[in-house]
Length: 234
Image (cartoon, rainbow, N blue to C red; front, top):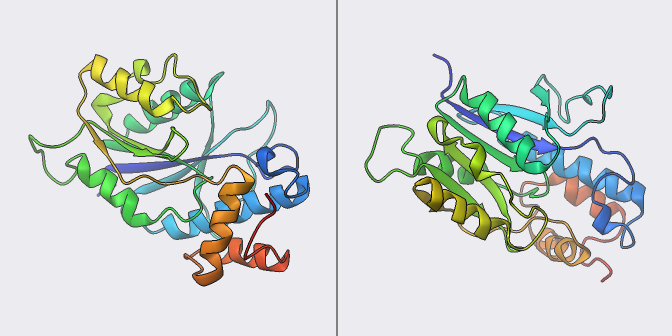
């Protein structure tokens, strides 16, 4: 029986100067690219085998081929389509919603995102049975004011949720909640999480990895090799 759930991982090729740019200075551009690749590989390895279809949505320049899979074995992939993040999210989620009853998207800047968190998001949509208390939209709030996960019922994938959102600001979550209310969608929130975008974010992750690999072996190995496991320069 085809899976009725689909998770899209939004990411970019690990090209120096193109990824994790806010870490450049604390890291070199090449190190930042290597770290991005480690984040993605750890995340995909953890999410593979979940009770959902996993797809990679690549942010590619025109004519650029999709990179090789970040871990061994085939993984379905697609190109992101749209001018800004809102358009790209809408097009990818709407495409997935044609074949799945429940769809979700995460970024690759949250390397220790657990499969159980994704399962909780789908469960909040009432994915195993219709429920009066089920949400139409589930958001994972990020500490910086954005969100690290969005999950929706297929019927709730509405372009208005992604239009006019001030992406890459501290108002992303608030604006998205406003749009959900305006459209009349029921929202559930997951526990707050933190993306790893800045040197301070990376310092906190390095401190946590010093005592626990968080099921992020590639990320931990890179930071240990660079002798940055316990701390990252501010």
